[in-house]
Length: 110
Image 1 (cartoon, rainbow, N blue to C red):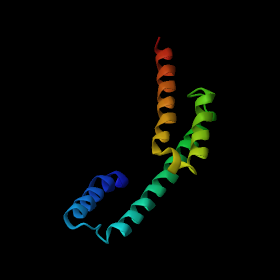
Image 2 (spheres, helix red, strand yellow):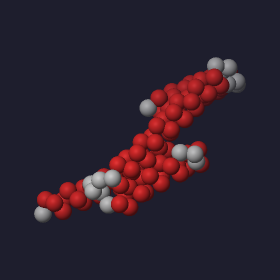
Image 3 (cartoon, rainbow, N blue to C red):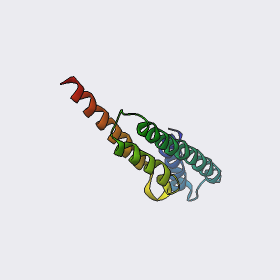
Image 4 (cartoon, rainbow, N blue to C red):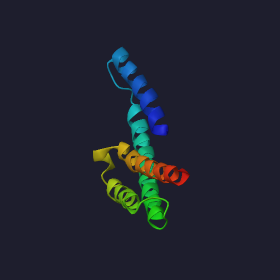
């Protein structure tokens, strides 16, 4: 959330300052470094969470085995290359898990 707030506020402020004065405010670089740290922490925790959730799916029968394997693969492989693929890749296995659980639930109901 901090990364999103940063991009929506600080970038707009720095752009407005650049348009008004012709230079980027000197405080922008340290703030950008701090935001990169926040994003790195988010990525580390989020990809780890996806991998652990995949492992949990493998040890249970809540979802098909391929869902757990996919979540583990995305969590393990995605973390080092997050700068190349972007954080959107985190949502793909979570949506797959949701669909698999919804399918299992609806098949139980009928």
